[in-house]
Length: 139
Image (cartoon, rainbow, N blue to C red; front, side, top):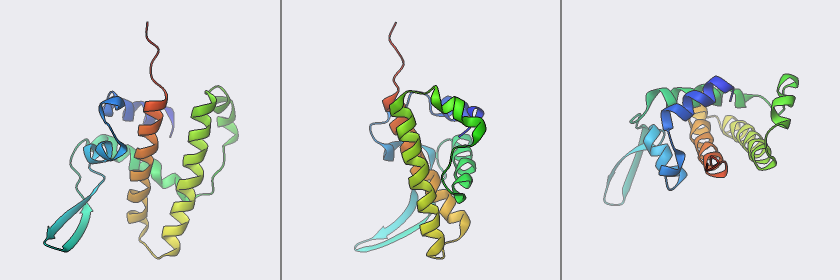
């Protein structure tokens, strides 16, 4: 995610610690599948699209980049080196996992738009973890 996308997401979500789990954040952004169930029959539909439309759009747009193999762009190396090690490790873990997930779902024949929304949902989980890892310093 680039700076403007990350800033937009942070402004849209606010304090990520108000969400106790990544699933709560995913629900807030409308990235969870809708469900129409009765008895033992469970029918899942498209995403609910409730919540913050702008944050959801940013995550879906960012998810398109996971079509390509995991790598660090030469112009981003300096930016990444300035980040704390836990942030770098989490970012690389996310990059590898989400790129692999895209390829796996593509190999199963899923539509690219469905894959990207699934990737955006997982990216939300990583964003939640990053928000909990990097708490602002108390003054």
